[in-house]
Length: 435
Image 1 (cartoon, one colour):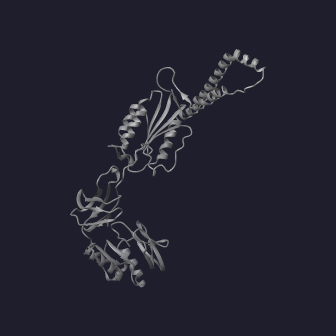
Image 2 (cartoon, one colour):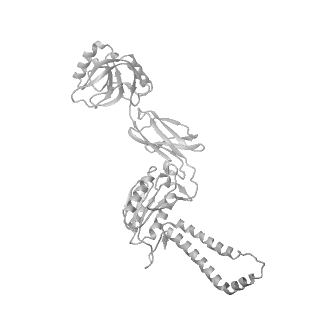
Image 3 (cartoon, helix red, strand yellow):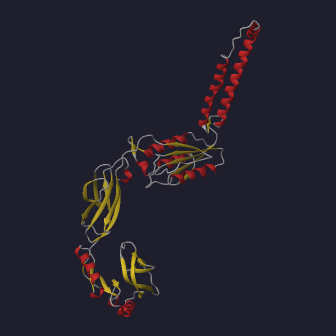
């Protein structure tokens, strides 16, 4: 015997009402001081046994009626022939979000959730319909043995998941089973960031298990970034940490430690390095492991190689020359002929960074030079007026004079920045440079 709505059994406490009525009735009486009352007293004595039996039966009927109402409201289900329960559609929703990897009392929360899920499956019968739903919405139905194997393979995911979507899929599964008894068992740690609203399941019984222990204090790596992404070959790694007090950290490149230290809460740490590795390499920023191990490490990637050799022509203008001098002083570039920085009317070979001619009179010669170099773009109309540049890395940049870029046949490029409604610079294939 089981109940679909066991809370209604609390109505059974109403049986105290007829008991009180029965006891209070025994005290009701009025003393009358006149001789004829003796006939009433004698009649009462002669019928007192009958009256007591009738009042007792009336009280029992009232108690039974109230108990029947409470039990009916609790919706009992039972299988009277043999052991077990009525056929039930049961969906077990396991919260395997990143927070379930927290270690509490020496065990990850997810292990405790698995134990609860296996306990729910232990009472299943062949007449039941069963599903397992994870917090990322994955649904698997089948026999108890199959679902126990699925539970054993569960691992925490890399984020929060979508608990409402998981419950919605569980409700859809139990509704489609065609059984009267429908249950959803939710096993979760109740993270406030996940459960923004309370789930409502009108046509299915929702059973929730959440541990009552306080969550452990978390230390985390909240930010890790290589600056810049391409090292030539020097650079730096920036990191930030979440903690209530200072925390120790370790930085690695290709598994080799290049930085250690202690950081204050939310302090940005910058460590410079010039590693011997070349090409694309992985890196990590790590802290000492704690009970919430999912955010103890953050990963980054960077490219390490020699600085490119750059040469610039006088026609590129003083602004370009100053920019290259700054890059050269920080060892981001060296003198060489890997890349040319030239005005469009002087371009003769690729790859090159091409700038418009300083003198507008040279615009025709610039477009002819672009045609000879095989660059499928031309400079168009000249525009004036201060305008902001929109594009990654161009924040806060404004221009006062610009030329439209006009595509020719076969042009294929990626827009790097936009001025007004048109592109101000584009990146094309390795055979053709940015302009």
